[in-house]
Image (cartoon, rainbow, N blue to C red; front, top):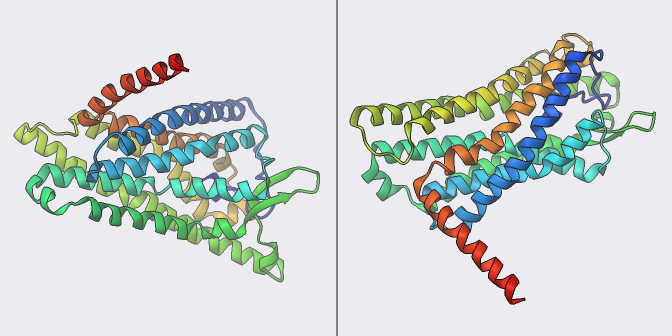
Length: 329
């Protein structure tokens, strides 16, 4: 994710002049990333275990499972980004992991599409339960879910092609975009850089935020209205509905605003050195956006009553089985 708004030409981004304020924001972003990694791996791993192996396949479970897989794969790569950030963006893990880690990070941006799918499923089930039972099948949900994954992989092609390790000449190695082999002159490479980053930045903003956010807000707004009007007993409690919309907006909007601003003024920021204040907000806003990956299982799955029952029954049974095996051995 952060690779989308880092300096693609020279490797490491120029750090703003060191100050107490910047250092505090940098340390806080590291702390948030560590918390996100630990909670995300544990929470999403638990969701994958219960939803993938303990529960029957339903449309909701398919959506939960895919969202948990996306968040788990992302939070599992966070330790690499944490080490890199602690080393002031240096990358000691090689070219292969440079591509893989950042591709996984970019794919995680499409978790918002999966959240929109969950919102649509909840909305249809709440407003038209009979129709949903007859038409919203597991096979249909699987086909729908596969498409965002394919689209995400296609949109990560620039990272796969251009992202690599770059030596700055002083022995420091960074994971950055390298356009040197793709142009005969500096002017050609500059035009290619600006074109690719502006196009990809706008696409990420539209697909990763502008499209899912209205869908999520409208769907959960209809659910909340239905709950308040008819006082039905919904699998999506009203507080969960409110928390889902609020957390998604609060976590993602600041980063999307900074990323979109960096995209619009890409040439001025990275090639002319203007608007350096945006660099200060990259760390805190990106860390806040990444924190949403460990909130998803708590907001979506742990609020589901069937999931809670299955979790409560399966954990003691698994623990008892593991302890009995140890005693036997």
